[in-house]
Length: 119
Image 1 (tube, one colour):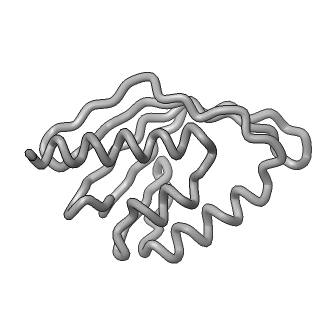
Image 2 (cartoon, one colour):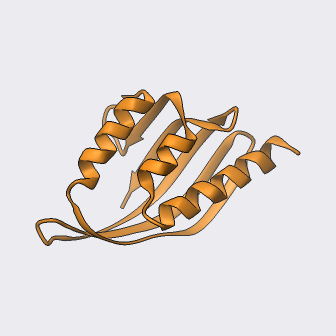
Image 3 (spheres, rainbow, N blue to C red):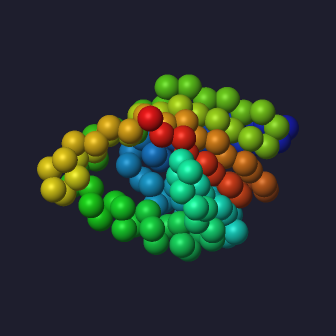
């Protein structure tokens, strides 16, 4: 099995978890311990524990998860790319729709860096 195949299989599983709103499960399963995550131009968050703790804080403000839908993806070497739409209603009633492209770099079946480009 090639590296691209392993990454593609892991990516498909990751995207299936996201589609179900299982963000923490996806991070626990696929982030490397030393993972670095960047949202847009914000400073990097480094370390799996920190990334998951901050994700839990964000999710605490979500009242209703509507969808996480991936429109396309690609894998090249140890890098995967995907475009997606995330939609939810915050606990304060604000409806949020985020369109994003995500770039992941993989090592040993885990994401070592992840960057989100939002629109």
